Each structure stands twice: as structure tokens, then as C-alpha cells.
Image 1: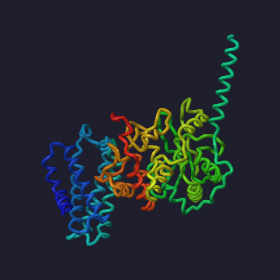
Image 2 (image 1 turned 120 degrees about the vertical axis):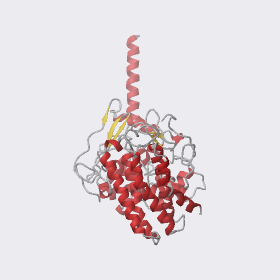
Image 3 (image 1 turned 60 degrees about the horizontal axis):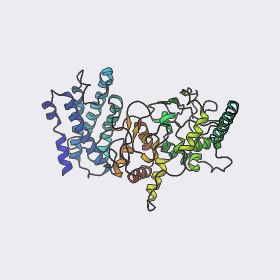
Length: 148
Length: 307
């Protein structure tokens, strides 16, 4: 049940995003937190820590989709300064960053399509759908995030 | 009187030189018999040993991680070390090496020419490997593609250009016995983890801080360190303050498998490539590494707090 609440709460991110639109760093961090929560939920399902449930699985995929659709809007010029681990490469290689976001969007859209109205029918279907989405975390972080 | 003093000084210097020469002589495995190697088993050693992280091209993926042409650079305060070609190419790689030459390199840090290697090649860890794993690894390396082209030379400045001095370094820091004294009742899994982490996995090479001479501070084993390159840090992986005490063994194993931390950040920096190697291991090895990391002594961060 706790996990279900977690899943549902991650869905509220787009609302949060609007509220914090005047602070792009805080906003994108919030979006990334919910992305991580959705990734964590997906992994818990895949590992069997949470019993597989298509509704929860779809909630996770939807959250990842919402992140993909909004995250890129919160990197205005000059927002690389301050409490952020955003790499300067986001602005130096704007096309590369745009391409990484586009891939994230494409992969989440494909996962959404595959999950249908009621969510992926079984765990294997979910793994096939969400696996490619999860690979975006690492590739984008390696290229566009600075490690402290 | 002055003459006498000069003579005495000369004798001292010559004597000191002789002692230095004696102490720093490269040691090898000598005529010891080596077990015959098996390439299939050797692949597991290859991934545990992380060879691809330095000897394959930077950022290589998939099959390209088996092209061991070297060339990856490690820019340290001692100078820039360049990983050599260890593909089976007969002249540019190690295709013409004997199994014995390979074992001397891995277990004693000595080249086929009888010279010391620099410890940027982590033989201080590999020295804790079983000879069987070393010959298995050699057998596996022999099956990989031959890649042409020698990697550039190291770029070091004096006194680090004097290879003989590495003999002293080895006397001070090399030890074949385990670093951590495990409890006598430690499980086989923890012992396997110790063997992987302290030996082939050479985790301590980056995660343990070094002293002024570049030797590991064994008392701060795995406590995290200033990165060898740049201004970053390598994290504390003991259960101590600043470390990973809050991670469960299954969190650690899952991180090594997937690259995701418990709060679902993704692996980054130099660890990204290491994690790729770890993901190729059988699950039981990742579980063993996790079990060992839960068993090592807790230490506070081994790097200065301003890093």
C-alpha cells in the first residue's frame, strides 16, 4: 500500500512543476526526484520486491513519460550556476542534450503504447517496455551531469 | 682528515647504492610451476579484473570492450600513465608473451624485460590473486582480437622516471596476504567477496586513500579517496560515516548489476565502466562482493572534507 501511495504521489509532478516555474533549478530537481522514484518503483517490481501489479506498473511508466515531456523545459541559459549538478555541456552541446531528451521521450512513448489501457499484462511485458526507458538515466547522466 | 672523510662518505654512498640496488631488485615467480589455464573460466576473471576499463578504448561498448589496444590515459600528480596494448597482437600486444611472463606481470609487477612496472597497473592488488585465475585470464586474453598499434609511452618527470625506485615502493606496500582480517566465522561468501575486492577487482586502488608516496593507507581501507585525476572524490564504500552503511547487501549487488543506487541515481564517473564489468559477472560474485563490503571495518571518509 505504501508503495502504491508512492506511485500515485509521483504522478503529481506536473502540478508541482507549474507551481515552481519561477525557479528552474528547484523545478527540474523535483522532476528528477519523481523520475528516480518511478525508476525505483519499476526496479522494485522487476526485482520482485513488490508483487507485480499492472496498474502500479502503468503509473510508473506514466510518471517517466511526464518527466520526459517536461524535464527539458527547465534548463534556461544561465541556470547552470548555483545548487546544480547540471553539466555546462547542456548548453555547449544543446543539440546533443535535445537529442538525449528526444530519445527519452520516444522510449517512454513506446513504453506507454506497449502498456495499453490497463498496464503491461505481466512482468515480462513490463520489463520489455520499461527496460529501454531506464537505460536513458545512465547515458544522459554520463554526458550531461557533473559528478561531485 | 678531509681526505679520510671524503673516502668514508664515498664508501657510504657506494654502500647505500649497493643496498638500494639489492633491495630494489625485481622479484619474480622464478621457476614455480603454473597451473594450466582455461579460457572459459578466464572470462569471469577478465570481468572481475576490470581489464577493459583501462585497456579498451574510453567509452567502449559491447564487443569493443574486448579490443585491448590500450591508450587510455591516467593523469596523476606523478605524471601521465598510458595503458599499453594487451591484445594478443604478436608485436604491439602480448601475443608473444609466455604464461610465465604474464604471471610475473600480474603477481609481481615485473615486465618480460625484468623491469618494474609502475603501480598504475594495479599489481599490488593482483598479487593477491590465485595463480590459477592468472593463467585462466591469460588463456582468455589469447582468444581476443589482435589489435595493431602500440600505445604511447608514459609521460613522467624525474624522479618517477627511475623505475628501480619502484622496488622500494613494492617493499613498503605490496603484500600478498588479505588486507582485512575477517572474523574466523566469516562465511564462504564473504571470503569470496574479499578475494574479488582485494584481488582481481582491485577496488582499493581507487577507493582507498594514498600517502605521499602513492602507497595505499591500509588503515583507511576503502574509506574513499581524492580522485587520482581532477578534483573529485572516490566515495567511501565502508559502512562508516559518509560511506554506504545504509545500503543493504542487496542494494550493493543491484547497483553492481544495474548501475542504480538505492535512491535511483545512476552510476557515474569512472565507476560507470567498472559497473559494466561487474554486470558481466555471475550473480553470486556480485552478492559476494556485497557481503564483503558489509563486513569491512567502518571508517570515516578517507578524503579531506573540503573535497
